[in-house]
Image (tube, rainbow, N blue to C red; front, side, top):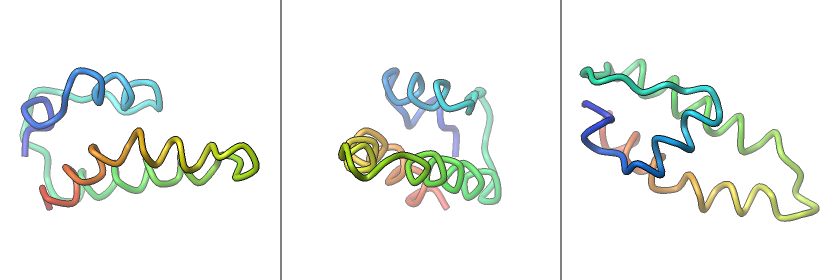
Length: 71
């Protein structure tokens, strides 16, 4: 799956903000799984007191759905 074709500009910026740089290429299932884990680790590293996890989960939900569907 080519993530540049599947993600919006905003989603690509979110990924870049957490250190994932998307290239114009076909990603393997392993690469998609690795990105999914990186996103989940990033979300879970935040505080639950300020609802940060909920906010980040909402922001990244579209990307995570795209990654899961692509595998």
